[in-house]
Amino acid sequence: MQKFLNVIVLGAGMSAIALAENLSNSFQVKIYEKSKGVGGRLTAKRYLQTRFHFGAQFCTSNSKAFNEFLKTNKAESFIGSAYDCATGSELNTDNYFIHPDGMQSLVKESAKNLNINFEAKCIKVDDKNNVVTFENGSTVPFDILISSLPLPQSQELLNFDTKEAIVFDPCIAIGLVIDFTKPPKHNAYKSINKDISWAGSSKFFNSKRDETWVAQLSPEASKRMFDDKDNILVKLAHEALEESLGQEIGIQHSSVFKWRYAQCSRSNNNQEFVQLKHNIFAIGDWNISPRIESAFLSGTGLANYLVSNNQ
Image 1 (cartoon, one colour):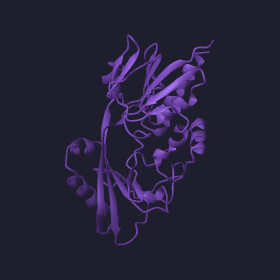
Image 2 (image 1 turned 135 degrees about the vertical axis):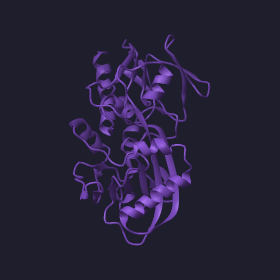
Image 3 (image 1 turned 30 degrees about the vertical axis):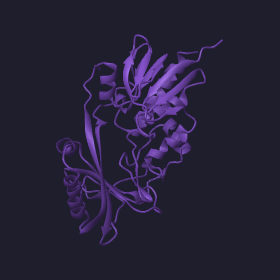
């Protein structure tokens, strides 16, 4: 009789969903996510009848497999135009993909058929007895353990070092409901100044919903201002948008979201995952490059490896 190996996955972001979806029926896969929903850094937060799209604002695709994933999960092309303030020219958005319900929804369709346990934070891994312990006191045995957490969290939990220096930068995103004097010409603005790397309207996701804006701070500004109060961050975004748009704007509502470990600075070294022990692995975009597609390829790469080695 064939043994169905018990695979435990920590985290429910893009790499974890891609991994679980691509494992064969030879595996019994359970995902454990500390928050209430899937998506990881594709975070969206509801506000009245609309959303603040705090996480990645769009993705690009250079592979057939990811193209198919985007098609299956109902991705669409970027709506409207985007402007690069640094070069004074419009961006080519032909390869920009979004989801009408926000980037978080890219993984929701795939996640429907997966076994996911929410609000389950792992606090300890016993790699000798192959058992993980969760914050609520429950313990779960595993045959294979896979961490899709940000690298620093994986390192702390699993006690390992990587051969290469990989730096994770924080990120601050500021959500705004804005009163405009006149409608902006573009739906998104890149490189607004040294502190604001991107600001975009939710209209490039879905033109029919109530509009929100999100400004994302640069890695340098996010590091410098990570512990600053929300009102200081909102003021920074407010003034930068007024300057770049050339008009006075009013702020009806604001919200701030912070990631301590958001973007990795690692070049492509053709390594899709890290094998820590014969049955413990770590996946994530940091294995390849800081892109959504890289997270997908990391997850599918490990899935292909596990399937081929279990036949």
